[in-house]
Length: 145
Image 1 (cartoon, rainbow, N blue to C red):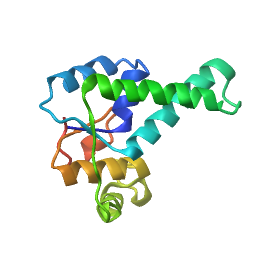
Image 2: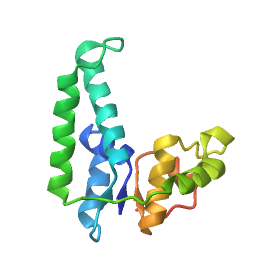
Image 3: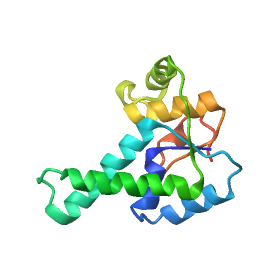
Image 4: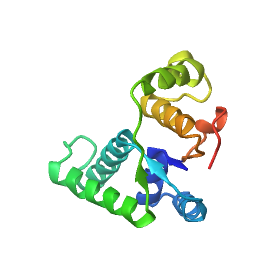
């Protein structure tokens, strides 16, 4: 299983769908993968959510908040036994295919963004189902975790 940032944000952000996603991780056959790009996207998204809750929409995100969230995300990966996938050079070619096929850029209903296209490409490369929150990936040919 490959984790998209949306799944991590839903779980750690305690969104209603988070418990269900965590259950799918617990029931998954190993390994559970993630990538550096997924970590970056999840940390920045969660730090932004915390910043808004504490400081408001227009305040800058304090560096210590990013550090705190990064530690939480790292602990989460350790707890679930997730493995960082070594993504090959040239993965951008597969991500660009995803963008041309399912991207928001081309008006596809899936509306995959930059990070989504790389999660899609990584899951395809690993021949692994993708765990995500929302409906975007459901409108593609990706195997759903």
